[in-house]
Length: 262
Image 1 (cartoon, helix red, strand yellow):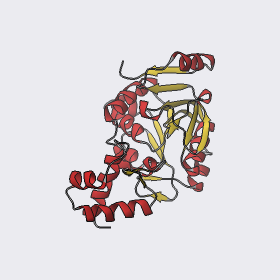
Image 2 (tube, rainbow, N blue to C red):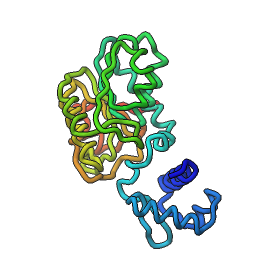
Image 3 (spheres, rainbow, N blue to C red):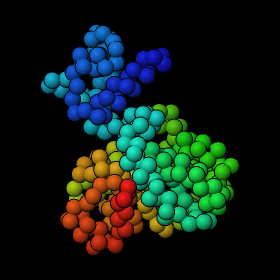
Image 4 (cartoon, rainbow, N blue to C red):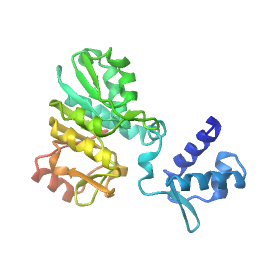
């Protein structure tokens, strides 16, 4: 795919991530192409399973948000993710050994850490994210860095495979920072892909303290696979104000709730 075509199809996915349904004509107008060209783009995205043709137009397919390229996802809910990262950094202590899985909220946390070089220089960081490793200048800005390798997911700037999960099982760390595709109404963290879920389960097993970072858009949804109940996490950091029922669950299971942006 040429770069111009790739850029336009990323733009289509970005638009659909923000609206429930859009028509061919609306998408053509927003991207500056003809209806015929837009139909070809939509056919290609539908063949990839990224969109669905529905009555009245097209919509993002269930689970497709996880396949939106990393750099595009990084532009969604940026203010919320930065607020969550600002809260998360306060949980770190000098000499911590931490895991930062590949997610856009952790990328914001990495950017926050670069602004605190005295703390960062004491940390040992484990990650499977090329974007995070690059933010830390390949490990030069922290005490040490271990990169979890495996098959490279070029759209997500990360490694994720059976080998990645196996490597992770060798570690025992102080704190793990992760996100989730969705948090269901019955407080189950879920994911769309089995490799992601296997990685996050191994991550939870490898850490003393687990920090779940999710913005308001991920609440009350369920993906395909169960990662773990919210009760398995030590901290929940979110920009969302929780209901009395959710607060009761959190208190019952000794989870520390941090409201970001306050």
